[in-house]
Length: 424
Image 1 (cartoon, rainbow, N blue to C red):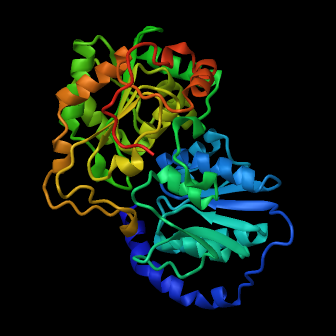
Image 2 (image 1 turned 90 degrees about the vertical axis):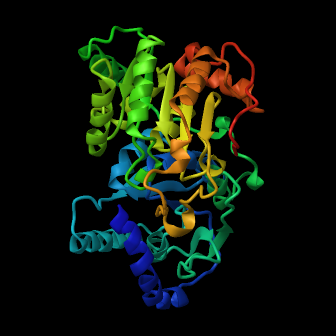
Image 3 (image 1 turned 180 degrees about the horizontal axis):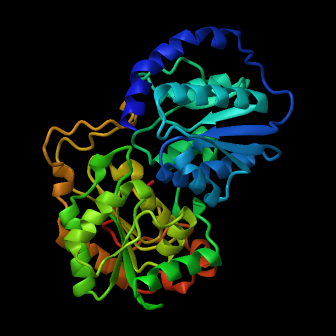
């Protein structure tokens, strides 16, 4: 992932320069008919896919007759399908391949996209040059993307939106899609990840195999942060201590989650925490992960995809922030808290440099400032129903979640918290 990020920075500018003739000869005429086929592009991270769902709703309203096709990396294809908001999902596999193989796959993808004859393209990547190049190679007459004076992307997009770093990312996405006059995005605007009874049964089977009785309340901890920015991980010993205290003091079963590539890090947390902690890293599909999160008494996660999936599902969720700011990435949900104790150097990861971290400390001071005691206190308050925030559209949202996931996920008592992190 780091190699891809650096290649986009260093080779991307060269690719944009070499492809300028295609931009000059492209016809930028208005469409004479409603768009029939629209492509959306978002390569990095399942959290971004979850935050993208309000923008997809705007695209539905803007292009009611169009087939909405989505392009992402192969590792995110399962999540994109589980969200259920796209008509079709296309993927690009860049894993376990050398550069010649990657370039060959990109060429084949470009030929396929051009053959699809898309009317419009929406590039939801922030400032990656690769997605801008792909937008151009589709041959679509109109392409939409973010613009910045700091990053040149070839001028390939016919329609641009200025990225606002003081807005939540989901709000920026929806502005690019032309939706809702830039109004704030709230929990009621999200489409949560879908799961079936079979997914719930599979989760129950996995937990029973670890001798967890049905109906036992449990907490889900995600000590991972995805390969895009490993610097977002709260220290493993603190996750382990949190797990031990939730298990011993609060009588909650503790379940660790992570992808197959995150097994080693998750296993290290379990080793520190003790055998009473259940490790399901690498054993769940996206839909099964959603089923697990929807039943959790509380979810504690680094700033990452599972945090956003949990919040959208209505699960009580604690998000841990440091290198990135919750102003842009806070979990959107009815029962969420974002913990952020930034030193002057935070945030150090931003969208203008492909999210390459630049921490000058041996340990990220921003995350070290968040104590186990503080996380434990917020998690307990969420379990008791004392920490939640009511959105303006809460009555409809509460009804929707009640019918979909059961009343046990609703804030049944307590009062709205005034200590929420900034949200969109």
